[in-house]
Image (cartoon, rainbow, N blue to C red; front, side, top):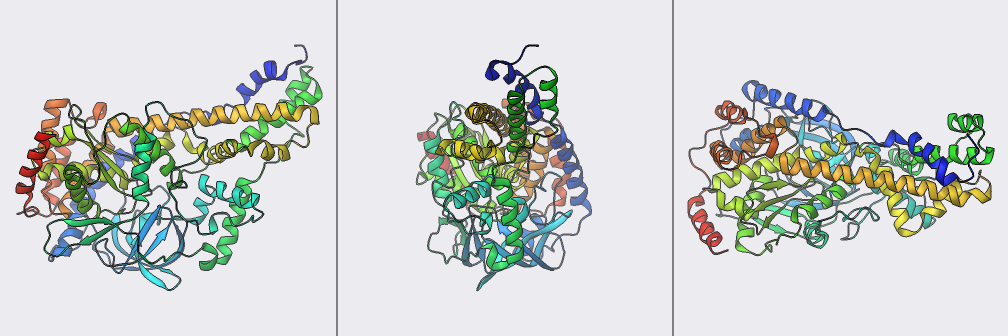
Length: 578
């Protein structure tokens, strides 16, 4: 082999071969976990002891599968991983609001309540890694004391290397204020919640429509019970006291460790070349030593800058925005004040108030698409639920609407979308999303310059170009693969077992909100006959049997939410005119 006279031509072939580690393959782990989840859910429903259904509150908790477990003492510092979370006076989303916490705020957890059995797919790094965990925790944040959903909180060390933490650290370093990382409070704005800059523009995605929904979600939903009303009064509140504290104010030592981990993840890497197998290989083949060194440095830097780390709700928000924009596409979104949209939102909010995750990473929104031809409902990772007017016209009762909304909320609870992204190899994204932001802001070349000082000056620009090309190619591949996987998850279901798991959990959520869970069987049976099933290609013939098997374990529902028949008649009239 002759020496490389054109490193971009000949050496890039070597680079393409030697930087394959980020091109990860999907796995079947999610399906196996989901299968175990369904089996454990059915087993648990028949054997676990739940809260006694002897009061209205107890009935809701029993239906929502809250275990008969006393409150437990806790001493742990956690961080908020949702755009915003309301702090409540009691361990319920319908109790009085005492303050608001934003993404990145820190709290000290002092008590756990309303314990539930986690499914195998639900453990994505949120509070408590045990088989059971509290759905609500009592927290302290400065002068504020109140209750928040436990699954909105994450370990600060997990969040330390999220794409958001890396970007914040680099911005702080540029401003001469390095070392704060994800330990400092970050105010949420419309721009910061949209996602990382520099990500690929996906074909068919309606970003303006998606961003309008995300902007609304930035103001928290208040689940306040209106006296005498059959529905939860749904509103978004912006006049709540700010209860947030930076991590350094809650736990200075932990804040230092988080800052160190974040700074290490965000710093320009140091590419060691001394014993590089790549350099030795090319040198042995007669490649010029400087060029061999460049190939070695580039390969090492690309590997370092595309290392994997766990996906967090930070990445869920970024990918969720893409999925929401793709779900909307060219279809008209009914405005929030449209009576049909208001109806769906009120039903959804009542169900979501009983969820273990009433404040998901983006926030719940119930979006109605003006599409009579499509019969579908979809759960967007991070919170938004999308349903078509075709699906609404397909339903025959409010109970059926509630059962399907409960199914979709269950997908959000269990973070099935984020799991599908993980299975597709998206764990390279936290590092690469930070690179994308630097590339879009024009800071990437300066960032790389520090890592390429060991190379001869004549080769630095060429090396920087190679690294940029490799990283952006890796980003595009991983980002589009994750988005595709998540969209398949949304449209077809992740696998048969996860769909059945969402059925079972959705029935419990619908029953906890006052609707008849038997309706799910009715609508699934009709969907199977009409459309071939709910969940696309992953429709399981055992789903009806599974739902029937667990129905007797849910509290009986002699009467559903008052006035549902009358409301449904009015909705039918509205739909017939649309």
